[in-house]
Image (cartoon, rainbow, N blue to C red):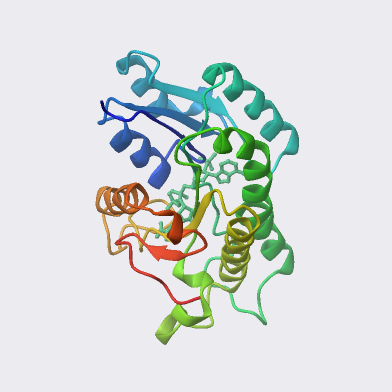
Length: 241
Ligand SMILES: NC(=O)c1ccc[n+]([C@@H]2O[C@H](COP(=O)([O-])OP(=O)(O)OC[C@H]3O[C@@H](n4cnc5c(N)ncnc54)[C@H](OP(=O)(O)O)[C@@H]3O)[C@@H](O)[C@H]2O)c1
């Protein structure tokens, strides 16, 4: 019998999150909860809902920076799932508010903004949904990070830039590691999707979103308990911290 999995993806209305929703729905045994800030404005998600039958796609409102919104979303999702767990929680929502800023020139308030979404937001969401994750078969938390957040990977021409973003993703990496250490029964990883053609990555990025997301999904589906706490790229290779 095909194993059925429940996925919850944040920031699912565009970019990597939306593509992940689309690819996961190609496997009929997946149930996908697509979380986004404004469901009424998420036209592509709403169109998908109209075409996907059998309760396989649900759209919920979730702003990761608002505790209230996160708690409301947790209630909404509990109602939708009716006691089922979340196999894969994908913390994908993220921002790059400072562009290619640098340590000595960045607006520190912008760094705090990056931190509020990329780190604190992910922490809020994971705290709110961990009970549902622990109820599932796969018990997996996927934090979408970036090679910018690894000192070992931050080499060459881009070393030293995108400081506020890189600092936040380094924080996200450590959050992932702490989650993995605290709960050995779950699998928590950080994953870099590559440089991807989205609003964030820009049109000159290296990978079409479809290529990145199929790699991320393949990597996530192949995870073993021993992978918990790792920082991987979308091809499943380890990225240096
Ligand atoms: N693209 C790349 O090259 C690249 C490389 C490495 C890592 N990443 C990471 O991959 C993830 C997705 O990036 P992307 O390229 O798909 O970016 P994107 O096209 O800019 O999409 C970002 C998504 O995050 C959502 N979001 C932002 N703040 C939010 C909040 N407070 N609450 C809920 N949702 C929020 C956005 O929702 P709204 O539409 O409401 O703003 C949008 O759905 C991010 O974590 C990013 O850091 C991307």
